[in-house]
Amino acid sequence: MSSTKIKKVLIANRGEIALRIVRACKELEITSVAIFSEVDIDGVWVRKADECYPILGDPIQAYLDYERIINLALKCECDAIHPGYGFLSENADFAKACEEKGIIFIGPKAEHVALFGDKMASKVAMRNIGVPVLPGTDEPILDIQEGAKIASEIGFPVIIKAAFGGGGRGMRIVKAEKDFHEMFESATKEALKYFGRGEVFIEKYVENPRHIEIQIVADKYGNVVHLGERDCSIQRRHQKVIEIAPSPRLNTKTRKELYRVSTKAMFKLGYESVGTIEFLVDENDNFYFIEMNTRVQVEHPVTEIISGIDIIQRMIEIAEGDKLNFLQEEINFRGYAIEFRINAEDPKKNFIPSPGKIISYLAPGGPGVRLDTNIYAGYKIPANYDSMVGKLIVWALDWEGAVRKATRALDEFYIGGVPTNISLHRQIVRDECFKNGNLDTGYLDRKLQHFNLDAIHCIEDEEKKMKHITKVIETIKKKNINVRH
Ligand code: MV4
Image 1 (cartoon, rainbow, N blue to C red):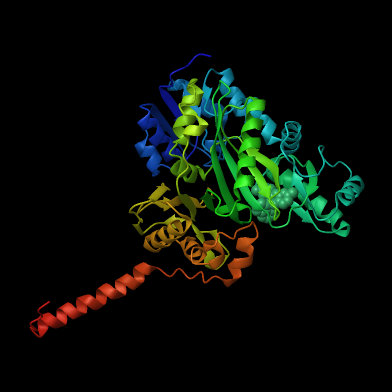
Image 2: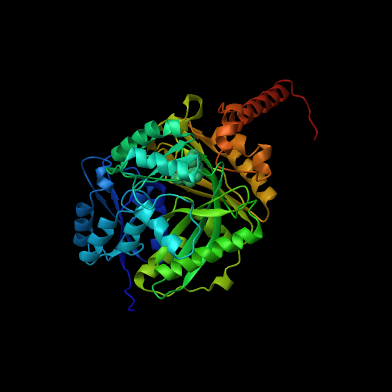
């Protein structure tokens, strides 16, 4: 297979992931082209990219209108488009349209984007190649009575899921047959509203599982490598809040089996590019495939840090037709990395989004601290997009060290002017269950009510200390006290 040197990439995304891709392009000496909506002109990625073009009109459509984006890419002679995550990153029609226009889609083959966009077809494909999946239906439920009957055969609790959705929308847990009808109706309605498709399916519900995902990197020549796992169990309303690599409590046997089935499945499918296979792990360490993400994920930095692999650069090189430049046995996983999603949301008001102007900004730093963000003092967080404004990632050789470093870094982190969820993170890292790595998807729901979410800023304590020491100095000077230290 031939290699096509990519010289110029259009980044069809915004915010921190767009900046991340600009950085990867710079290090590969690839020209980066940013697009931005009318509310995003102050984005760091816009100014750091080699070229930037406004997509005027609706601020959301600016990153979804793929005909405009492809035409712009052609006009500025880009060889490739990187979709990042969200927006068009899992739109098979977009991937196909790029290929038809002769533009490299930096990601998997369109057929795999389509396959894994269908949550039922994904399960059938993975089950056929030996990946454990949960008992459930392979087809959408078309008749409620039939659905209730199947649910009873599977055994309650069951979970109803959107066939063409993800992230918890169109998802309902049904604990008893009497609730099935109402839950089926509301799941279907929500799936239709959010995904334009109302098909739902059923599967056996796993109580309080751990959410473990395997990072895959595969080239166009059948070389498939895993980059370990991430524990994403700390979620709030299906939004990941903290991600950890490796999982602090996964046993070695389960870990190795997860790696084995994941790499084997991707090899058999002929998968190319990066991808993440999501599993649920129950209390008896049984694991089950639930979905696959055919894109780079928000939480990729924790894997980059423990493996030493730049996932975005490898994605670009794979798209160019390069072979992977490392073997599985050459990947040495070192230490623990923890990612804290920094969201402009108000923990004191049930985490409603809190866009607005950042008045002051003091970022943490020091050994083992990485910050992937697009914010700065003076930046106005737009109200049009997801509330995540950045990610704080820490690394240490052992779990306890990573938790200590996280505590220190979060205590340093100060964003003035808009409420953020930093106070939530500061509570979590001090929680015994978290420190013991005792995590499952129900963790945050159990703990939230007990946390003190006042935005207690260590900065204010420092201000008091500095005011005090200033007064002491003035007193010394006034009384001409001779202080010999
Ligand atoms: C499940 C599950 C338990 N049993 N499926 C699917 C979408 C993904 N983001 C979360 N999903 C889950 N699928 C079965 N059969 C548990 C989750 C799940 C979850 C469910 C409800 C509330 C929060 C959750 C957090 C992570 C995983």
